Length: 61
Image (tube, one colour):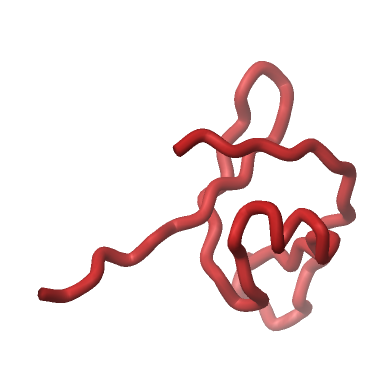
């Protein structure tokens, strides 16, 4: 599955020393990519563009 959406967002430091980043993704993008608040994302720099991808946990069988 290849879905993509382009938008500009602001990254925020949570201020807890964790080196995590908070990214406020617009609701329409969350819905389009089937994401929810709290989902984990990978971050990668591709051709000078920051690419976020969902990190999906495998379903235990």
